[in-house]
Length: 508
Ligand code: GLN
Image (cartoon, rainbow, N blue to C red; front, side, top):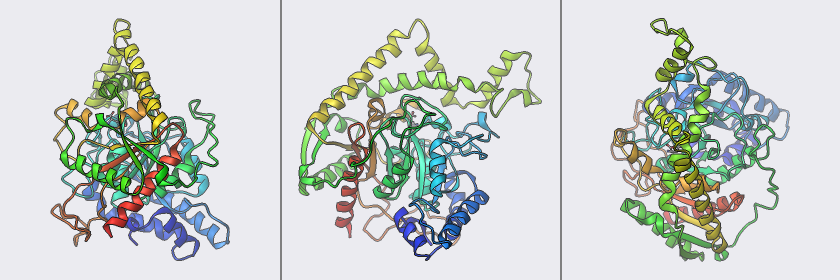
């Protein structure tokens, strides 16, 4: 059983028809994990025992002839900054080494009610800060398409796990692109819902006004299924919204869709392969009857700077709680430590517990929020954030959906950007605006997707050229991003699904 070939709906059908059991599905995931993990390192923890128990419960229900929801028995992976009660939650940081979550995140709770099977916790950049998963304190994840390349980040473990067939779907968090960019690098679907559509309760906060949880999947339809299961108001998260989603799933006519293509997203710095692939995709949508129009989002050039002020400001506040006393790593337990007083406990635990990127952002954030600089940086960035939000609301007066590349480049090689944080930050140039504006956005492969790379005799994938039989040799995937207006999530997904359909028609 190759999980790469299974979507949620296909697996559900197999379960309902008793062609496979949930325990067998979980075992297929663990077999695959055993074969691929030494090359990919998508997981920080594999929860085999718990998953088996969850799968057995689903099998009992099926045996009793009870109806099961779509996600029942489907193997899922969860980014290690989302809490599953009793399971580790490290956020890929040394400071949370040994920490076990005392409760379930709201979305985990909702998925458990559906009968979800969680196979493990996935790797990420420490506290979700990064674009390559190289900032993990526990070693980088590799791109399953070609292990010389990064899987993107920060949800690189979740994206790699789905792309490698180690699970059917995964959950990630997206503060500035961390679901969409790794999805784009690994050739899968990644969806960031509207801010407030999904509860953040039980997500280890990075930048609370930007963070959203969302799915990473093989298909857009799967992203819809997961989104429908996790969304909705939650009294544990006061920013979650009570939105009436009924009537959102309506079919649409492509000839009535007006697509906006923002000219600022095709400026300097874009890789020509990305540009050509995305433009070809837009042409294809146009030939199907969509109306395409060039638009302008005039404050785009300030988005990255705005993000890299607001985000670290919130990071510095959110990460203040890791003091070496309440959670995980503490200098008190370090026998070689020379702590003399309480301040030493705080300072040394944070110094040794946090990695370079996290400390860089805490320092930046503290500076930005300091009395003398607050107005010049934080206050000003908030004003520009409003202008960026207005860019989107103005654009959506005229168009239904905005289409852009997800990232200016395809996956890059390990070490290529680690020496220069600014070049790493540029990887987020097309994704941060959706977080600043709160709008929903999905990344879908822009070209044909190669199926899972063939396994060598040892289960290892050769890093050399591989072909998927569809004429693709050694290609790294390009992501196409669809951005919609607030709470237009289902429409964004419907249009992305349409794209998926016409894209695949072409290649077969
Ligand atoms: N890559 C971006 C950053 O480093 C986005 C991270 C995210 O979305 N969590 O901040």
